[in-house]
Length: 222
Length: 392
Image: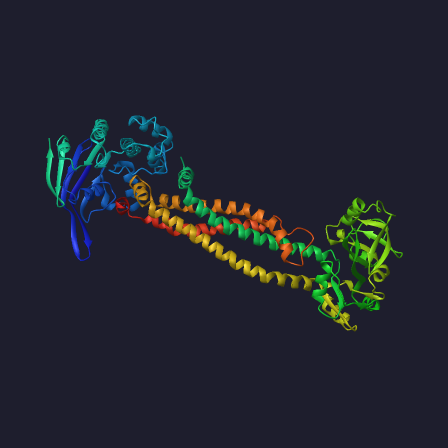
């Protein structure tokens, strides 16, 4: 479902060329649960951005859901991202002027979905936020905010959920709840790719990808 | 949820910022509305005032004819006069349809000064809309009261109740008895606040025997007015102006003040526009991450542009509407203020609701809003989502 073929990403900083990713090839199938680990600045985020269609590789090719992203126009990329990718961020990134329910409705609004209200209610129920939907993010706890963000990421029924340190700002008890939620979502067939610093946690994942200095150091399937 | 709930919830939850931007636009719209409405009201008021004189040409003694006419219009007294014979000479000029001699002055009654105008039958040719209850004054000491004067006298004087009653007034240092023979139906002009009498009565009252202040002329052919004026001015010591010229002079007087106000208003609008632009820019800087997030969850460039552009338009529209309401209030109050500043004012109120002003006061803020939201909205649409998400 997701194939990266010799993907390289180069940034120019002044006259210097910085390789964020070097010659990465990997394949991820539908329904996998993949952990991405590596030190800060190793290129994990760049990898996530390329998989999430927010960035394009300098060399190599990427295909998602059978479509080669190198050939897509800007609008087509947006369209594909909207349909296939869901994002969950460490800082939650909820829109502060919108209620939890409105935040969940936002991707449905951008997709022009007709029954956004019904879908949002269903998703809030799924993440255990059905009683907190009318609250603003400032009135929610960290765990509640991340649950809302996960509901938002699932709004357009994506095939891949990209999570960048989703429990990085949460206490360990809440973090456990959030990981449990991801597992549940994965069991329903959604591919999950999660960046984490927590190697102990990553070891519990069925597959772990190790990135160091932009290179794929280790791709371990249990 | 639709685009409007997204925008309005956003504006509502960023109260102070939204309020400041809206206020800037509202002030600009209010000043624009007041200026245009007052100008229109003043001009149309003055026009109907001058039209109610019924004349196309006004002949006065040499001097400053514009000043003379302006003074007459506010009920003042003009020192320079013409011999009464001038009327006959003017009436014989070809193209003159009617020439009506007028004497303007004032008498004291009930502790106040009241304008009185001496007229002859020719006045009726100039003012075909006049309807008099009772009679036109023909004998010495007979008067016709304007509708407002009649109502006030009937209420306060104790001696005048109905047509046929007389009032005792003071004029030219004498006590005089004037008999009310008629009451003029409401005309909506200065005439409602005036008293009309025979030419000779007015001349006696004001010590102007054998003299007249103006000769008001109507012509057969408007196209020949310049020739008619030239012919009138051949008579010794007589000068003539057209009503259009008087109107033009008054408008010129107003124009100077107007230009200054216009400058102030344009500056206000520009400040309002810059304020909106600043608000929009700040709002985009503040929300850089939100924009990155929106892109990540599937917003297209066009959708981001629309969101921010409509937010800018909404600020302008709300500001424009509030400004309009404030402007309507200010215009009605502005009438009273103007009356204290400007000496030549029409009797009717100049503060009125003007369609042009409403249109302008709504259109300009919207244009400015559109212009100032355009760049920030484009910027938001073009933001690189990765950099935007990284933004702290």
